[in-house]
Length: 301
Image 1: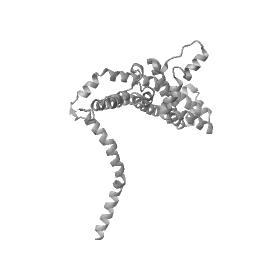
Image 2: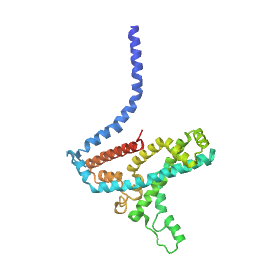
Image 3: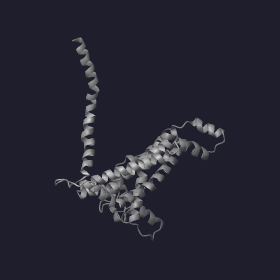
Image 4: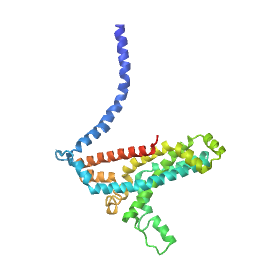
């Protein structure tokens, strides 16, 4: 009896961790794993959410490969990514270096907080702010431009193709560069000052120290930021959707991103099968770009 009691206690101790972890696995299975698997199954169906689904095989993926509107959304997204990420990284490196070297203590913390605030601001508030700033008739930007040149006609920022793209680019740049700056600042703080002192003794200038010490040691941080920024850029939805809901995607669909296209196909046209195929196509695209970025930054290692 004693041996059986000991065995029971051992079994209970082995089961207890799984018992406490079971709520997480249950919630993960219901709200994450099942939707992922079910959406993959739906991507092989033709289904509007009401009528019975029809199996169509790879037809949805074949349509995706020939859908020019998807490629247009892809181009719009890439334009934002290619321009915004280098600007954000440059600003993040510059501000992080200035704050680390010139502002200590409370002033440095206050500056980091000020630049980080846009990142935690809700997309609705950001969209309203930019609508007020870039309004055609009473926008702050047009009023400032007209104050410098009284005869200048107001610019319809939100009503033209490149005006809309410029506004979204500025919005994305302003909202997210503070997050990159905080991460870069943490990376700079992890670099020992002894390395810079040794380089200074050896006669290295500030420019040489930056390119030979700072950038190589920040390489893992920069790689992380580039990969996550690419993923975040492909997932961009809230801000352009709130600014350009009617018509969706802005003038001539110039700011229609991939996720906005997915939203239109799935929840406006109720084509859930094709929408699921588009979602998985976007996942493959993010995976490939992430792997290429990692390979590019880690080449030679």
